[in-house]
Length: 255
Ligand code: HEC
Ligand code: HEC
Image (cartoon, rainbow, N blue to C red; front, top):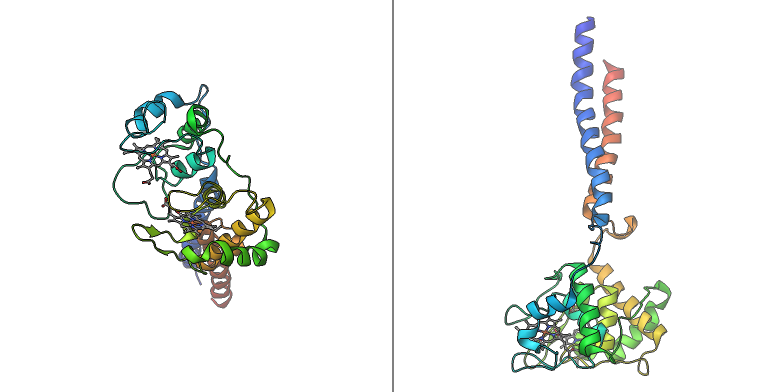
């Protein structure tokens, strides 16, 4: 075999491999960097009072005591405020309810500023944002608590249902914190469950159970600790690459 043919064959085999390696090198770090892409907090932070006047006061009133368009927020608690904002229910834009996956209307920083402002203005006294932990050891206890307290409305598997005038959402879209906030604050027609009904450990148990419902729904997310499809895709690429390398060597050996 002539030197140039050898070279050409080498190029034919290795160029695609190198190209794939290049793609892998770009995709893999990008997939890992994605969750950390939050912008750095701006120095003075958003003005909660200004945001409230602009986005909330028309319905809830300048002092959050309510109007014909929205209820009073007195004593609803920071958990209720954060739940409504982080699930994109508020600021209310249209008739009807947003569906999972929830996309907040406001930025994280604006939500945090409004959580603080509305709580200080009127919502104080109600439940705060609960610190929840997902613990696999609590799933079984959470399951029995769920069947006792929640399944009547949300069904045993959490798929949701229907009340007289509004749908009961499936529980797969809420984050652990949002589940805790919903339980403690009781959004609209859902009853609130305070620490007397469900103590901290029991709340963690319910949250862990609801999270486990979600996991049965997302196929393949677990082995990579939920880095998501792009990271897994990148790993698939890398595995494919190794296979290709092996194949290329094998062809090379034969030639
Ligand atoms: C267009 C009117 C409208 C606007 C604007 C609006 N809301 Fe609401 N809000 C409502 C209505 C109506 C409800 C009652 C619940 C429902 O129907 O979903 C509600 C419920 C809430 C609740 C739940 C109260 C409870 O008892 O748990 C909170 C908290 C809340 N709003 C906060 C806000 C904040 C903060 C803003 C601004 C970012 C805002 N809302 C903007 C109409 C509005
Ligand atoms: C009386 C019926 C009822 C019971 C009991 C009930 N819920 Fe709800 N739940 C609702 C309704 C209605 C909503 C929707 C409220 C809304 O859209 O503002 C809801 C909303 C939620 C949400 C928000 C879901 C989402 O993705 O938007 C979560 C999480 C939740 N409930 C968890 C629970 C848990 C956990 C329990 C038991 C401790 C429970 N609920 C008990 C009726 C109920």
